[in-house]
Image (cartoon, rainbow, N blue to C red; front, side, top):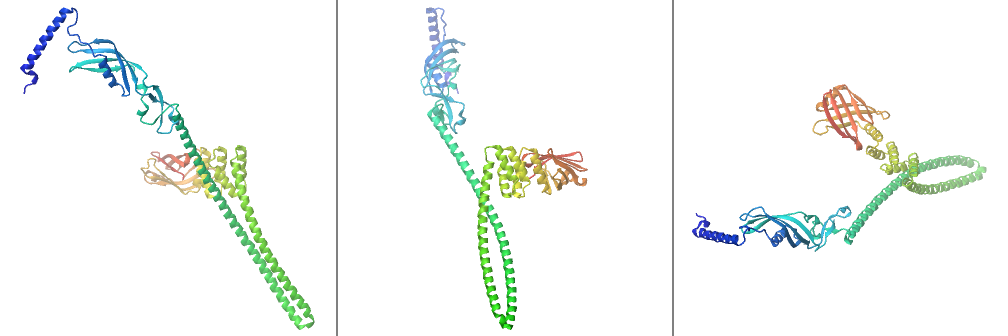
Length: 489
């Protein structure tokens, strides 16, 4: 199939156009000597403006374009025009850029700083390269001062934008701060309510304990009263026996009847007096128990409040004195209360004092809390004391390999000297850990540097970190080495 452009008609038409163009060129060369026959001018300012507006963001408009210089690097057939131009442009809306310092704005808001007002003119400098194709200019524009750093209108930001320094910005910041303050106040109120409930529960527990003590004391009083009553009953029984014997004698001896009758009357009076005394003593005992219960409850509540106020005093000397007084006192409940309050105090010395006292506390719950606080402490000495306490109450310790992919090393039959930290144990396990068992009992010590155990075949070196974490190295027969780890609790 032939190309349409090769038809005779088209060939003749093009030849005719060439002849006419050649003749016109010759005429022009004759009329205007020295003028290039195929001179070609570049695109005009309107064409540049049409292309420039397409290279700018949609919210910019072109006011005018001035061509400063122009040169043709090609020829009349294939023109390659380079031009330098200046263009007057302006935005159709106020422009903004993201401003730093938006940390105090609540998400998703961002702060925007104004850069150029709507309609403000700006001169753009640039160059173009133009080529002719299909009767139209194809332009490549290069701007020397781009407008991208001037930002964009507020409504084109992805996040909600707030103008820097505006009333809206201040209102948003104020509302965010108010919300934050309200949340902090709510959290504080919640914590105070939980603390109040805790204190009330402790008071109820103390009251119940004292009621139990009072009940035990009441039982002792009642037992004593029963014994006294029995003694009185026995005494009365003996008196009755004596009176009966005497009465028998009086019966036998009529002349003593009057004396016998008086003795019986006196015995009856004595019995009545004893019963009245017993009733009065019971009433006095009940009143004494009620007063003792009320007095003990009031004293406990007052002591709790006094200790709490002393431990919260702004003066550190007063706080330390209050803590030492309670820790060295005889009231176990007040001592436990003070220790639990100070275990995680911001005051390092008070926290240390509370931990040391808690480790010696009779209460298992208080001692457990003190061990946890000691293990979480930065003080290596406190962590050592806690570790000794834990190991003294444990019979074994399991230490898996660091990658948890192999067997587990078992440290069993632990015996530790609380004073020196010296300890003995058995080392066993699967795999290479089983090589330790024939080595006999391992011995070593728990020190500030960690836990070291050695027998004839194996060596175990452990380091203890914060919160009871254990890491270390196990070596069997000087060649099998494994990293192990675990936790004390």
